[in-house]
Image 1 (cartoon, rainbow, N blue to C red):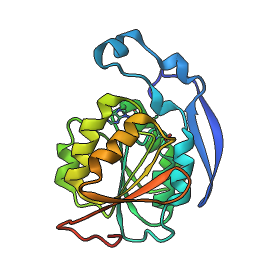
Image 2 (image 1 turned 120 degrees about the horizontal axis):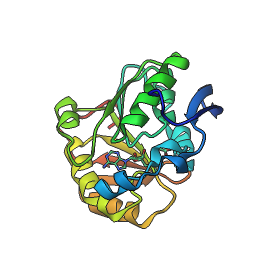
Image 3 (image 1 turned 90 degrees about the horizontal axis):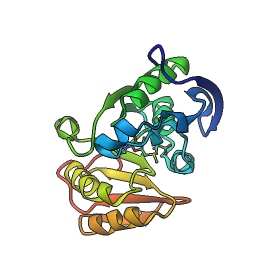
Image 4 (image 1 turned 90 degrees about the vertical axis):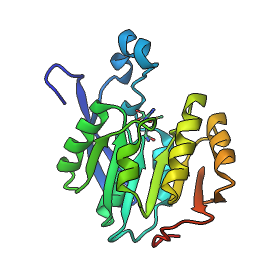
Length: 207
Ligand SMILES: C[S@@+](CC[C@H](N)C(=O)[O-])C[C@H]1O[C@@H](n2cnc3c(N)ncnc32)[C@H](O)[C@@H]1O
């Protein structure tokens, strides 16, 4: 991260694809700034590894060779790194530029090839232009009611198979409810739902 940025610590993370050695901020709470919160109610949730990211990793298909995977709200991006190790072409996204900068560095450290981009769900033109994706993944992204409408619109427009990991937050349930008309929803492991488009122009490898 940029000079003068937060103090980083190294963390060893066990994943289904072996160990990753990640840099992450030592004290995520120190990243909270009144100015950023005032602008967009921004909180630096990207700087922690949430349990949902581990549940998502366990639910990922074994063979992702040759598939295009998009991660929304990647934060530290462990599921994206696992997908990259499984041979997927990965686009990891978050609205936090700091998250993206650190994920690029962590991908290099772990010799994982992925692309990481700063994208806000409320301005997803870049993602829509790059669709279709074979698989869209997201861990603990719907934690506020204001996330429901932009995520519902984006996921519907992408019309891909989705793996959504969530600890049972009310806004996430609302999101699933919004998407149920367009997607078949099934359990796909601990706290993970798989959404399959009821009809999609692009019937990807996982459809
Ligand atoms: C609770 S964290 C989960 C992070 C990571 N997926 C995990 O499970 O460890 C939510 C993530 O969503 C990102 N996020 C929140 N609002 C966003 C938005 N409007 N557009 C893109 N990313 C957003 C945050 O920066 C953060 O990385």
